[in-house]
Length: 100
Image (cartoon, rainbow, N blue to C red):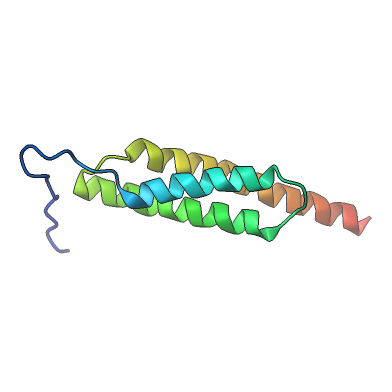
């Protein structure tokens, strides 16, 4: 396994937010907004799944780079997981209703 050195900002520079964590947070929130709109679209599941993936990737990178945004990454993972479970439950319920 290779030795990874964490990136530390130079003196006087503030650590910046991890872009992946920010994108994951925005996408999971967009998924919630899309889920509240009329009509059922698979776009909601895709947006939430991509947001969840960005949140996980951001959290992994933050552990190494020491960037800001850990809370955003964790929030996107939590919101994305709950939303994805709700989306899957809705699909199962619709499938069960159609089978009757």
